[in-house]
Image (cartoon, rainbow, N blue to C red; front, side, top):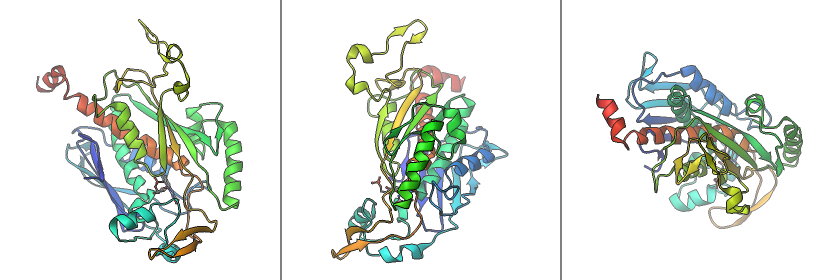
Length: 357
Ligand SMILES: Cc1cc2nc3c(=O)[nH]c(=O)nc-3n(C[C@H](O)[C@H](O)[C@H](O)COP(=O)(O)O)c2cc1C
């Protein structure tokens, strides 16, 4: 139950970092959606580790196998299960921290909660699980594509250096998913420096949802914005999210209000959501990632017996998680929107009548 997300478009992920496989079961997908397996592979490829020096060097191909829910290129309305077999686990890299908690990671809390230490690559708390979310997001995007709804994301800040431009087209080709080519040059320098110093960096992702109709979001506890926030904060290492103008809290009401004309809103400080319901403008989010906790500097910690120890990590880690995190953020946004669209169908008699006419 707590490994599932969504009300109607509902996915459940399974698997651990060094287990046999990870995967997802997506339920609630309407029958008749064009299922594009190549697109699913492309989406996983965008998040895949080991592609360049800005990501962990774990070499996974992340080839998905679709086990159910699709027939002759269309969804059947039954659960879609997708499995990805893990191929490049190196559990011995973790044997020296078998009994030790990594500062900044989930080792301490998982051990104290469950009494079991799956030290192999972080077990279920590892962001390896996010590949399964990207698979779910790809299915959600297949629904959105048929409705012309688009989601795009890119890196807007790394190590405190902010992009001056927001070029989402450029981000698609950039190894850092950078929104600004010039900022990217600076970012590459500071990431390389952090790696040399056995350190890591944090970053911020900007995300846009385009062509949403007015009316998505269920007041008052399943609002579009609170569910987007919950979706983003469920991603490993995400510590904050902002909807709309990130300076809004510094503005006056007169500056912040989006005035309205016959043609529509005259600005978009609200980031496309009012009262938890989409207002037809682009939905704009910023998502704040902390630095990767696993770093190769000696650090103070304790072991499972309570002794003070020094942690010296081995293994392969992302020098910055925000970069691959942007693909995960897109996937989670797609799942939220697909869910909100399906929920919206149950909210007006006119939609229900259309289905039964
Ligand atoms: C795409 C992605 C990749 C990540 N890669 C790593 C990694 O290589 N090493 C690491 O220690 N943490 C990595 N993390 C972050 C940890 O999974 C996360 O910090 C940890 O589970 C503790 O959770 P918390 O930071 O949300 O408290 C990654 C996160 C994301 C989103």
